[in-house]
Image (cartoon, rainbow, N blue to C red):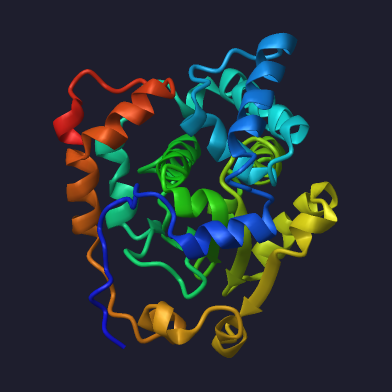
Length: 296
């Protein structure tokens, strides 16, 4: 297979006719009623005054509606939870130094392949064993993960189809797990289930150990059946993973045929993408004084 479809940039163009047809059939997005539903959601926000979104334009509200299958009531609840989460967790949004946090990419803790998986979804790969708590606090890991999600949700195709997450726990130690307190576990559940518009289509757990099992058993009672149905455990069985993600969309580490992509290409684009930078600032992110749009 040719790998010419690598694209180190966000795809901000309108969804293809095929994706829009999928949206109509699967999440209730009908072009004939779309504007009416958006207007209804906007009226609910203004009437109930349960939150004060920084934007209520069609483009912004649409990303939330797509996450909730165009149900205005459910979407309103999501928007309220989204802003409550930001209000209650300012440590994830204030003084975020993206210049420093791109080190999580170069260290291999977090990576996003520059191509879509076969279903048209973005993948985000987390190698938790590579996280150095002395170098990056857990708050900083959350900061960067959330920033990546905020960037990813800018893609209309991602709003419709959602994303795929791979969590690799090889070399994950008890020392690292010690930082993951019940409070952080709850915050993860909030992000995953009710406080963010990016839908997670599937979560694949690989190379998990007894340390992961301990953490997951703490979290599991708080996960809904619908979330649990999206989680797949593979251990070191790559053939099990390949039943969900074809090898042609995976790097060699996971038995795939894709060449390892260049992290530097992503960093270069994010540093110079003023659209992304401005979007994050509009969302309420604050940046270090030595950071400007040309540094992101």
